[in-house]
View 1 (cartoon, rainbow, N blue to C red):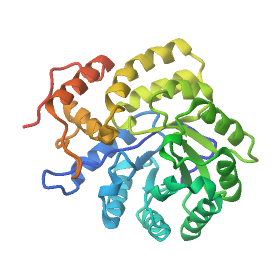
View 2 (cartoon, rainbow, N blue to C red):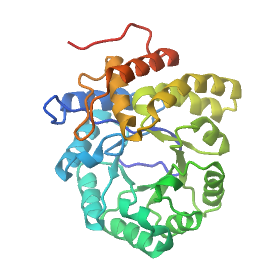
View 3 (cartoon, helix red, strand yellow):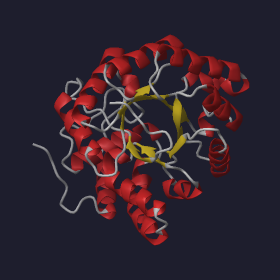
View 4 (tube, rainbow, N blue to C red):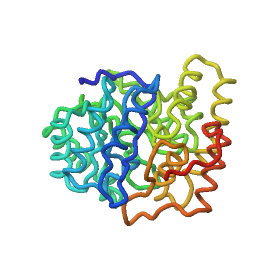
Length: 317
């Protein structure tokens, strides 16, 4: 379906990719996971093939397959396909695949190579985005990574990209430095057209909504979509007390998921869904390792503290 979301925020969960014990994509579990998220009231779109979906462990055909399964399972909820590639030609091809598979938009990641100095070569950034837009007319959500990653765009580059490429309808804002996030929000608000800003600053989602973010795009939504909806809606109506109460439930989850080693963030979310009885096989693809028993217990404790789990630890047979 067409994605008419310019100027519209809300909750966009970044979904996980379930695997079978043999490492193959578990289509049934994937479809159930997507449907569970997509039919949560208040969810505006579902995102696949991002960091949360272990996209770099998927080959090109598998990524297209994930989009097809998600589009079928999500019903009328738009599916946004992550485009992760270090090669411009690869990114362009994946964007075309996503469109053919039925995606409504793409989440365009900066190539990892950009961490080595793309900030000093904005023309390279511009050319990358230009060539992807030439390959596909899908609307673009531009991923603004953290300053620490070296892949963040300067505010000036971000504005220039949004000005030059009308296909950019939203920015996934993960700069993770409060004053830079504020600068980006102010700059985007001054554009001649609306560009949705979706926070993914997971250690301070509450605060970034207060700064003016239009919504949240986060892997946390794969576990706690209703809480993110409640947080966003409370902030939208100016109910700070309720927003604080919801945030208190989110904090234990953020602390247990977003901690070193950060490569296990979404692996931990799979374990959480397994404990909640919503994912039959929690293990990631290699080289990631399954979550150890002590950390599994910590995740269980966080689920209890969040109110998402009220029963003893669940085990699949």
